[in-house]
Length: 479
Ligand SMILES: Cc1ncc(COP(=O)(O)O)c(C=O)c1O
Image (cartoon, rainbow, N blue to C red; front, side):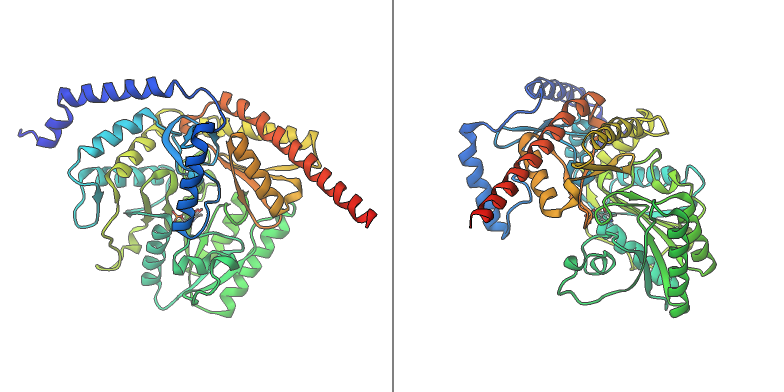
């Protein structure tokens, strides 16, 4: 049989040797990254100038003064100011394998040897086919019936494609049901679904969205009954006009890592099924964060899901659909599906999840989660005035520092960043500090090393706030 030139090149001993040398080089230089370290004073001035120029060109400062050097080791990342930090937010859930994972270096070399940087709907390589087949197999392994899928370049686009196929099938139904405080992305349409006023301020209304309260763990039965009643009410007010309900099974950005339960979701999904309203699971943040590939599998909702979106840690994003949602020609297409490096890396990450014991109740995702949340529980027990929680599930972890005052939480997180641990804010009021661990690049020992920093900064921050408040009160007393 004729050998493809591409295969011959991939198997060329020079490529094998080049990869070996690159892995060795990476390992040697990564050895310099042994733990967190402060910025290098000699780099500081240049770094600040670069940040200022970037802020001027962007028209806004960065949330954190973070410009990576392009180097890291597992959970550690080096910034261009010479500092090294624990990355516990991973680009909001993207750098799942940590920094400079050797297997992704190989995927990158393989991608660099491909003929094109980008792949798209008109011209794609066989690695796109492989990835889509893997995603469908992963999604269907517990009984879901997702027959087709499309790759795309962002989570918001995966959701756009999901809504488009649903609306086309359900025409003329055009209304959407969504949870209060949900986050669905930032396109024009998704900013209508996303339940945050600031994210749609000044934008035209593109979609009619009806909101449903999310699960409240302090009132399981009541909150489930309330949500079901609200869904029924919306369905009655607009008979036959709802196309779908979008489910974020663990509320992320808006909710601050609040999971629902199997009973809650089933109760809603049964009503939706009876009313012929599509169940859309937005797994853009939850994919790879529970004991299963997908949170719908974790909650046992396989029989209900009809359309599923995923992204972030998968590098290339995707919309998976049941056969009956197959769109008419022309509805879904894109110049770019994803870059070759994202497509190849996605397959490597899926392979790791499967073969390196990430999944399952005792898999790495859940083990890391327990290690971190046990520490947060202990922190909240020892300092109830400083910390509440933990919240979340699996690889999505949060706690409420300092009573959840958004300004204080943001300033605490900035101090934590300066001290060498990167988390991020979530939720509204109370605000939370949230973490998305680099599951493939972190060990329990990294959590053990980072946690004392998280605690020390919290205690110091609270003490300094208290002394500022005391000084303010004394000043007022004098006046
Ligand atoms: C649940 C959910 N849906 C959609 C999105 C949008 O994804 P992207 O930012 O890749 O467009 C996000 C991103 O945070 C998300 O968490």
